[in-house]
Image 1 (cartoon, rainbow, N blue to C red):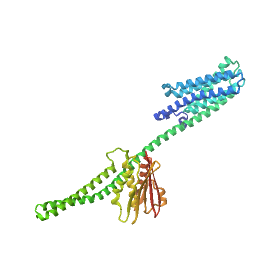
Image 2: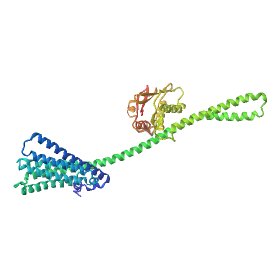
Image 3: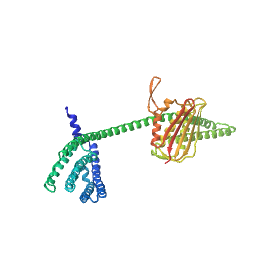
Image 4: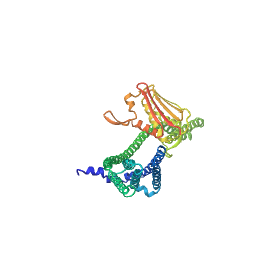
Amino acid sequence: MRFEWLRRWLWPLEAERDEGFRQDILRLSFNGLRAIAAITAGASVVLMVGWWLMFPDAASTPARIWTDVALIAFGLGEYLLTRWSWTYSRARPIALLLVQITAAFLILSSLYLSAIEPAADAFIPSQMALAILITLVALPLRPFETFGHCLVIAAVYWGATELASRTFLPGAVTEPDYFLFMTMMTFLATGLSAVLYSERHRAYRAYLETLQAVGDLRTAQSRLAMSESASSMARLAAAISHELNTPIGALKSAVDTLLLLTSRQATAAPEQLPRLLKLQSELRKSIQDSAGRLEQIAARVARFTNLDQADLQVAQINDLLVDVTQLLRPRVKDGTELSVNLSPLPPVAVDARQVSAVFYDLIHNSLAALDAGGRVDVRTLAREGRIEVAIDDTGRGIEGARLGAIFDPGFEVSSGRVTSGNWSMFNARQVMREHGGEVAISSEPGKGTRVLVTLPVR
């Protein structure tokens, strides 16, 4: 158990048992295989052109050009290999094998060129280092895979040297300094691989936690929206109840009186009939007016709730504001005023129910902040591809500290009880941002508050 952490760090087999992380590794490995193919072909083109321009007359130039041509063809072949679907799930081992083959070809080429230019084999350490670093950067290798890859590269150098000494370069021997260099590269690359792989796995876990947090946040926002909607519906119900009382009372009184007149008409003297008929006509008109007012209230509530319509629909913001302000008229206190100044606006696609609830809450808050003699002005304006709805009040205003956190949801202590604070403002901004708009508030204590709602025209 003492070295368990070291085993997990160098041999993290359990990480890829997570199917999501394994799929992420497969994707990275496949992209890495393509990157290795592109680097092999692209770097060879650059080296070939550069050597031909700088050393056109060198004895080794033809051999180097043919070497680069072979590498270009090999790189193109690697890329064509990625066109086959079966390479996706095997991209990592295929990429390691191809890099090792490329390293063997480069080492043999350097040994062959050293017969023409004695210093050509000095490039072998850089070629081995490149074969290690390119896989370390392009592929999500586990530490033990990197360690094994480095050992294979060292073995490739030894095998290439033995092959050269027995064929085209008698007397070729392996350089101890190169093996010492490879030992240092092996430990360095293995350590870096362990760090990179661990960070990839940690980033994947953080991604999952972020998804979970986003899901929880969306659930909380959905519940908050439902809570705010229920609160708005409760206030709406109170306003509707207040507004219904007048026409219902008038309708009830008119019906009762009409029934009474009808019963008296049967026994009334002839000279009383004209007066009774006039009263009946007035009562019928009162009944029609009351019924018409009830019909308007019902239509306004239907537009406000939109229970039978799709979430997004083309609507006129002015119409929504008219419905909201009419529903709020009974909430206007004596001595205060609610004025509406609406400019022509283009139609917009919105969730009318949500947007109406936001306007209802914002105007209701402004009315609640008024003292005697106060005023709330609601104005609309179309400006440069957006709609602006300004709600100005001459109320008590908002203190600077509270204004700075006006959109932050939280809780407050009021009269010894814990109550929610700013949730309606938080919800209002969230709804408008989901529609591509914004809510901004400016206020000065004792002078009033301005709420500016903007929506894009689209």
